[in-house]
Length: 278
Length: 278
Image (cartoon, rainbow over all chains, first blue to last red; front, top):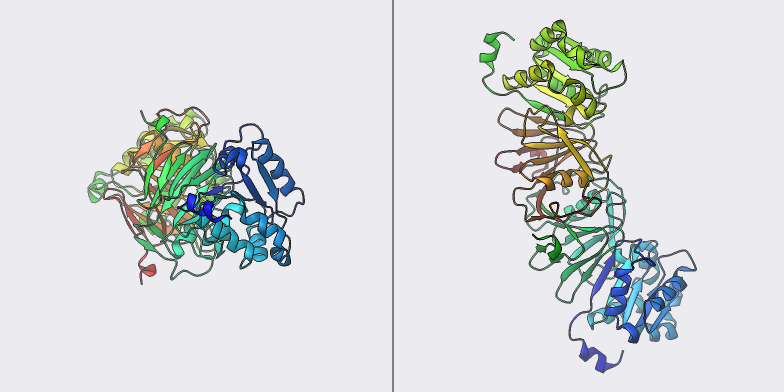
C-alpha cells in the first residue's frame, strides 16, 4: 500500500461481517455497500475464497463485484499454506482497497492462513483504513475470538461451543452467522459465558454488520442482528459446569436490531431504525 | 372442595408449566414434585387429557401418578364441549387436590373447554390453593395470554406468533415450551413485542417452572428456563411492522436459569442455583 494512502485513512477500516446467503442478484444492498466503501469505480477488491471447497467461488465473487461497479476484483486463491508466500498475490493483496472473505468453513481459513503473511497483510490493511468484510465463515474469522463450531439450540450447554483464534481485527465482538436460520443463540451465549467481556453478535442470513471506525455497528439487510451484551452479567455457571450440562447465565441484555438501526459497541447503546420510531 | 380445605390454603396454588417430554420413568423429578405438592399419598389428581388426540394419554398419566405415590389419579376425558356439563366429572374435578393438563394441541383445550364450567373450576381451584400443572400444550394454556402457534427461528418476525386467550391462572407470564428443541426465541420475543408487560418464559423439554403462591418461579429439570424481561424495553417496532417484517426490539433482559435456580416474577430478580455459585 502506498504511504500516501495510509495517511488518507488515519482510522481503522470498516469491519463487515455478513450472516451468510447475502442477496447477490436481486437486491444486493450489502455487497453494493461494500463496493462503495472500497472505492466504487476505483475499488480494488481482493477476494479470499479459502473457506470454500468450491473452485468456482472466487470467480463468482469476481463477477458479482464487477457487476456492482468495482473497478477491479480479483480472487486470491489460497488453498495450501505454501500459497501464502506467493509474492505476486501478496503484492496484489497489499494494494487492495477492500478485502472480502467468502463462506465455507472458518477452520479452513484459520488453518491455511493463520500466522502467515496473508493474515498479517489483512490485519495491517484494516488497521490502516481498508474495509475488510466476510460472509458466513468469512465473518466468523474476522474477530479475535472465533466460533469454530458448536451445537444448535436456543439455550447454552457446556461444551456446546468451541472457540479458536481468528484474524483479530477486533476483540470487541464474538460473531455468529446464519443466526435465526440455524438456531444459534445457545452457542453464542455459551461463548459469552466463558468470558463476558465481548459483545455477542448473531447475524441472520442476508444481513450484515457494518462496523465503522468508531465501533458503531450499522445493520444492513433483510433479517436482524441479535446483540448480546454481557457487561452487566450477574452470574455464569460455566466455571463449574461439566460437559453437556445446561449453563445458567443471568443478566444478559438482548437487542434485536433491523435494517437501518445501529449499536454502539463502546457505549453499548442500541438505536432502532428511524423508520420504526413513531 | 370442602370449606375447611380452602382455609388451609389462604394463598393461590402453585402453577406448574412443564416444557414437554418430561421424564416419566427414569428420574421423574418434575412429576414426583407435582405429586408431592398435590398431597402425596392423600393426593387426588385430576388429569385433563383434552389436548391429546391419543385415547391412551389419560390412562398413561393415571398410571404414572399412581406409580409416584399419588393416592388417587383420574383422567377426566373431555373430548367435546358437551362433556364439560357432566356433573360426575365436575364433582371429581372440584374435589381434586391437584390438576394436570397433558400435551397435544393447546387450541383443542381452549376450543373445547374455554368458557365452560371446567375452565371455571380449574381457575377457582387454583385461586383457592390447588396446584395446577400442565406439560407442553397443557403448559401454554395456563396463562392469560397463550401462544397458540407460530414460526420457529431465533429472531422475531411480525405475524410470526399468534396469541389466544388461555385459562388465565396468571397474566404475569407468556409461556413457550420445547424452547431449545424447537428454536422458539423469536416467537416468544414477538409475543412480548406486542405488549411487554408480561415476562416471557421459555421452557426446555423435561424442565418445569414451579411458580409458588408468591410468584417466585423455581426451575426443576434437566434443561433450562429462558426468562425474557421486557420491563426496561427501549423500543419495539411491532406497531409499525408489516406481516413478515423482521422486528426490531431493544432493551430486553435475558436470563437462562438451570435446575435449582429461581426467578422472582414481581421483583424480576434471577437467582442462580446454589450449586453453581463458587
